[in-house]
Length: 214
Figure 1 (cartoon, helix red, strand yellow):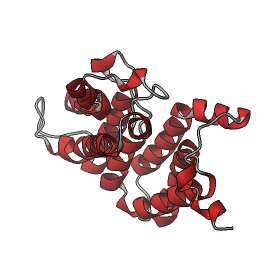
Figure 2 (cartoon, one colour):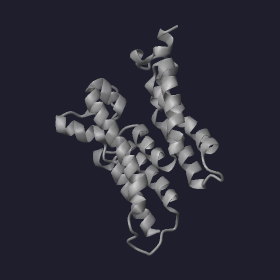
Figure 3 (cartoon, rainbow, N blue to C red):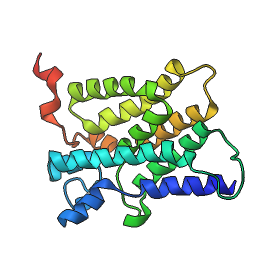
Figure 4 (tube, rainbow, N blue to C red):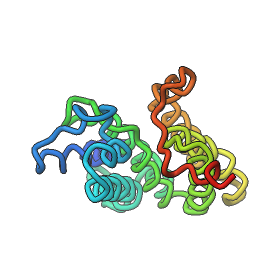
């Protein structure tokens, strides 16, 4: 159990390496003091620019991949075996990385919303879900122009995609991963949903292609 504990802790520490905050320090800015105040890719795009945002997203995805793929492959330090299979350990470490992104220990527990890191984790644990999630995200974004809503809907679609497209029988850790990630994305985007209800949510109008073509 000690080996599993330190691997999960390592996943969390990897997740705490916030791309936007690390790159922001190099540029002398704190993205949490700009735009929406969120340390994520969308705010990075609106506040700093597309090159900065792209680098942020790539870092956030990469740390999710590293936590889910590389950490479980490390040799045990306190025993000869681990209590779970590699995929289950990857799922737990990946979830820890997403939690680290949202509540980073290095940055006062004020991070992003976890979407990019979640994509990296899902790409490793359940790659068959990536294409459906991207399609759902794009259709929602093109139809509404709301990035936050698109992310929430895509996150919720992870649950049926995991069961309908995954292996049979589905490993319990995969189902837990899908449900927890969907719930976490719903939680971290609660302010976006509140603004949607109030009619004050920022709309990415340039992405609203479907309405424009009517």
